[in-house]
Length: 302
Image (cartoon, rainbow, N blue to C red; front, side, top):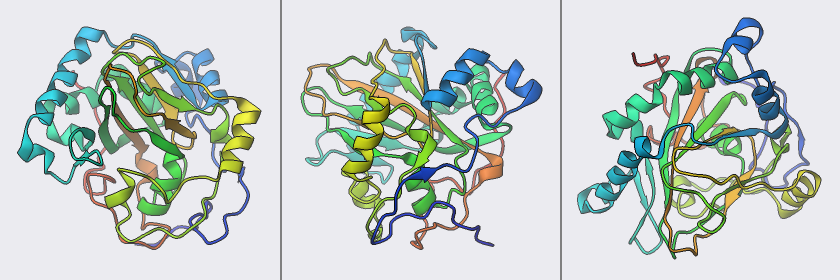
């Protein structure tokens, strides 16, 4: 496979300064932009902030079954031993489950919800496929957090995603409140690429999915962007939807509350942005983290 030029160099000994992105934020134009599910005001907000919160996108009753399925998975010891399942440091609670759309027909159907899929196509300017799907879970009292990072920085360097043309759709499976570790995002941070210092360890995903050290931006860069734009943590009921651009810096705190927090993520990538070889020079990550075999355009269920 012919490797593309690397416009977003990272994971080198000395990280350079942040610099402006090379691509648009909303990729559709003309009728596709105007007639998609999102209103023009919502598109403008997504372009400005790098994320968009849609409260009660689904009903709590509609997503309740997905959280029940996660609880059933946690009780299945054999399931918890699968590569796609990331346990916490003590191997007592599920931290993440990947490839959810391949594990469950219900999750696969949800990726093709006509309105949700239409939003992804509107934002990315055409046909899309699932680059990655996962549930992130934080049990009450003990759920660990996630370091500040840009998903694109990881997907570019470790997976070979050429350009910033992917979007995460995060569906709240539980209520997200100020106390159970909601996702924090820096508005406007998607406008800049922040190179990260240090080489990528071999088989980095075996440790980074529990605690990320490679691909973490400097505190100085995070401080600059946060002081410039602030930090927001959208909260709301189960069934709400958070859309965030692949380059938006985000993180979350540990869950010290008694209430669990679980979010389902579908990462939609443009079919014109399929993966090439990892730009950091490492070997490919597993298919459940970075789809290469199944990249056919998604079609809405009817």
